[in-house]
Length: 417
Image 1 (cartoon, rainbow, N blue to C red):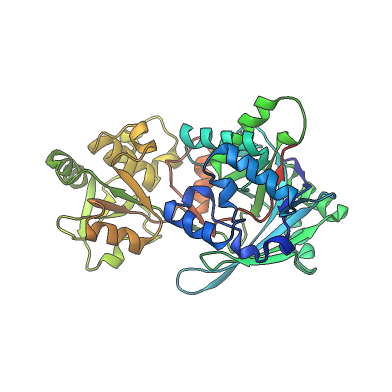
Image 2 (image 1 turned 120 degrees about the vertical axis):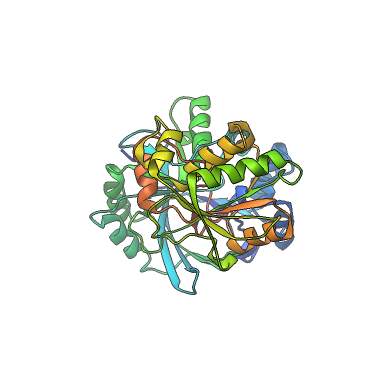
């Protein structure tokens, strides 16, 4: 069962930092060196100074300094926070996603408790664990989904957003993030009841969740460290949107054997269709069979490749649950990355010969310009398919989903002491 509790928030003091927009940032794992520099230039108090610090010791020192000078303040009264994110979806449609920020007791993965949907890797977990030890704070919320079949949580959140908002800030993607704070015990109790029997699905933040579990066990005993900062959103929220993440390959230019291996597996196991335009590379969502787009930098001809028969995937992924064997990303990994290119788990984890792009235009440009030697262009994984795979206890390949919009870091923090 999900144990939701309000938190004694550590947060930025608006009078000290000015605009909240200048101090928030995307999650650490989507920030490259250039973006970090841009964010740091916006304010000396931007959260990247502690979430992506020059060193773990410096993160701890910076946090201590900010707290001493009143840049960060700790609230006396526990509260929950409702976050409403208003954004523009592809095609120009305005959408809204609403969730509640609270602390959740860390639990083992399993039925009726909490489920992951993507594999994790040791490097990011070691990094986040060292940062947690240094700051003794959850800096960035984990984004999780839950079934709100009775609508109880939704009604409680709507009551909270009926009041004056605490703060609002636009992020770099143009999403308007609005926060409401509530310490109303009746509304908190309604949220607790709504979540009490819910099975949670981690949408974003697998490495951070597993880090929180490791930190809780490392400290031992009971206390604030047994909880983790989480944004909880209903699975039926109309603003829930999933983008695909496209795969980019490098190291093929001077390796004829690998080029031929890709060609052979595509011709053997897939129906290959030449497309009229690169804009068609992302397959339509209603294609029932496993499918993805393909283009290389040598010929720059766009193709759609569709699995000839599900039995091909069943053989390649023998022993895996049926929902997993129908995943575009899993079939691509089995037949092409591991099969044709002989990539290991370590290669995939450390991006040796592999990169990702969430933006279709950027992925196309990467191939056409030669930044990448080839690209596989994916469609979004439906939320129902994510749930089906998670229910089997199996984790999807990395970057199988990109839930949008991202939850900014810096809105609120959760101290662990």
